[in-house]
Length: 66
Image 1 (cartoon, rainbow, N blue to C red):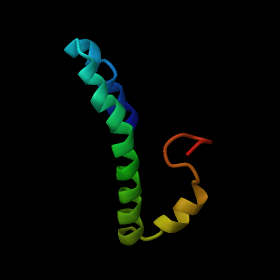
Image 2: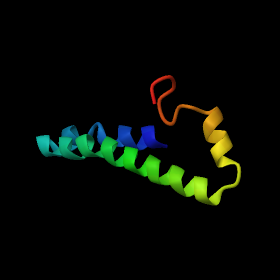
Image 3: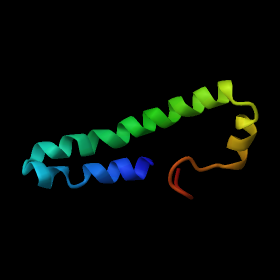
């Protein structure tokens, strides 16, 4: 889902025919990282067994990277 929404921003500069279309493309990954941290916090507090699952699955977004 995160990759699909990021890919939606890739052609934006071409569609807008402006370099201003690069602004959302540059900001979006930062927003996604904050969203992932917040989502994990909510899941840890509200979903039983998520902490154990998180210990088993080390990578959040990119396998073998993060």
